[in-house]
Length: 204
Image 1 (cartoon, helix red, strand yellow):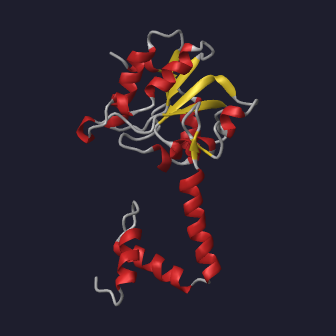
Image 2 (cartoon, rainbow, N blue to C red):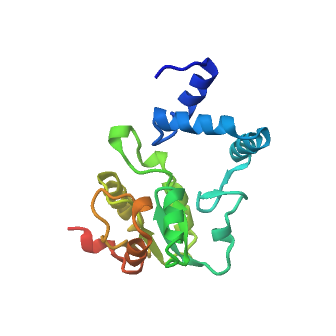
Image 3 (spheres, helix red, strand yellow):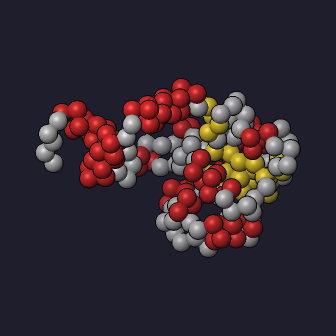
C-alpha cells in the first residue's frame, strides 16, 4: 500500500496493530478521523489517554473497573457465595448481558496454554484460592471457552478446588467446541449458565 504521507502511513500502521483491523480498515479509520473537527479528535484521543491512566483492576475479582473494587463486587444484590470464573472482561460482559446470573466473578486474565508459554502462575488463580479460603463461597462455576486451552484450565482448576468444600460446576455445553464465550448469542449463553452441571460428571 503506497501512502502520499509518512504521517498517514504511521497512523495507519498503528491502527493496523489493533486486533481484527487490517490495513484497509485502518486506512478508513484514519481518513475518517482526518475529516472530523479538532474537538472531536481531541475527545477521542483524550478518552484513550484517560483509559490508560485511570483504569484499574478490581482487587476482588480482577475485572476492569473505575474504582478499587468494581460495581459487581460492591453490589448488595449479588450472591457472594457463587463465583463465576471467566477468562477476561469480555466474558463478564457477555454473561451480564444474559441477565441470568446474579453471583460474582473471578477474571483469570487468560487461559493455560503451554504452546504460548502461559502457565498457571501467569493467571489470577491464587487470588481465587484466597477467596475460597475465606469460607463464604459455596459454588464455583467454571465458565471458560470450549477450547483445548479452556478445557486444560478447567481441569487444572478442578484439581486445585477439590480441597475446598465447594460445588464445582461448568456451563452446559450448548456451545460448540472451539467456541469463544464472547461470540455466543445471549440466549444460548444464558441457558448454559442456568443449566450448568457438576464438573465431576465430566471427569472419568
